[in-house]
Image (cartoon, rainbow, N blue to C red; front, side):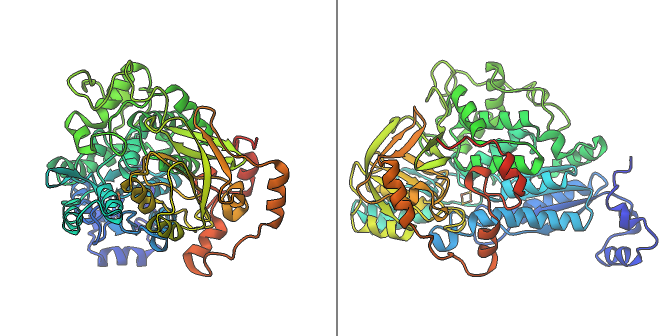
Length: 571
Ligand code: FES
């Protein structure tokens, strides 16, 4: 089989001289025109630590591709940094960017008939966006993760990006000097790389390595390491092998692979954003994955890793003890992973791990199965009159399994931020942040600033938060997001008023406001949908096309999928 089965459509057809003339004009030789074309897409851009080095890594991938007799053709797409877009204005574009990334890679590689695809990506939405595109295109592909950032340090305190938000909370409460506040800001991000804890980027990197779509050990490699450069150079050989085997993403992205990824996310205590992203990637790969599948994994798999945000260690610490492969090897020994699944190496997961030692008592980052941090998963799906189509809770166990209290309601992140400054939040309350869902935000912004500020104010373990928006992977505490239906669609969360009693029960998986059906009906009759939160452009297109959070906030959900999707029924 010709390895250039797509690009030859225009490189080897005498009737398409313009295509060939343009490629020759772009610097390709006649010999190059007979080689397979590899699209190399980077989300590199200046102005963000997660992405600032990606174009350089893409250059290394191109070198590695050329060394294998392939033609690497670099192109870029956008990347949006969650670390910089905090605040509703910018953050509204974050989840939207996942779709733009997926759509633009699909359009570019599809239009130019690339035979294979490498994506070099580095921040929260970059990775799922790239995976969605690779699954849609279904041509030999692999993902290169830009790598994790080094930890920062100031006055002996270990720092990461979340330290900045927590410092802000302390500043608001007069617990930290301006000098120390500035010191933390100036030292939290000491160079390139994605946020260092088990936040969304590292969660997705570990999940994607486990899915089999990036090479072994790549997800925990620091951004600034010789090993990361070598991974990029090696990508050429892996891509050549994938082309020769005609091994495509949908051969790798099977339902069982998603099961494995959910297990690793759970063991590592990963981000709730993974629920949205894996459902979306699965949809692109033609795999039917639901929130209930996550719940089933949470019911049988414990949290074992002592990683930030709720734990002690960073991803670079995991790298030092063998990285994700060491975790996978240990889980394989426990019988928690399926080792028979194919990966981008052309070998199975178990074959990749054949010479990897498992983790034991020589380290304390990954606890043994007999002494878990939490006996079941931290990601729990809660249903009730506040979330008839589900919500996603992140329950580390430290905050308890049940919370009840009076509601204090905010209709935007800005309202909540002002409420924190005005000291409106009191211990014992359930903080409701609504109209920040996929349509209402729009773009389902993360509540990183308010949640970190609440932490910094010392209220983190004294209040619960529920929202139809998202939480950052860096958030910890009793937090429930992805409430569905969202307030903009008239979900139960839209009907809550200050002082209503809310009961959240992570062991019974319930989220309810203590109101009768009659009272809810009266309030529903009086409820009015607010005006569209965007009037034009990409945000308006997003409002018109985005699915609900329980369907992964995808923008290409066919009408019949809504009918056949096996979501947990409303209670
Ligand atoms: Fe890029 Fe956190 S902002 S990984």
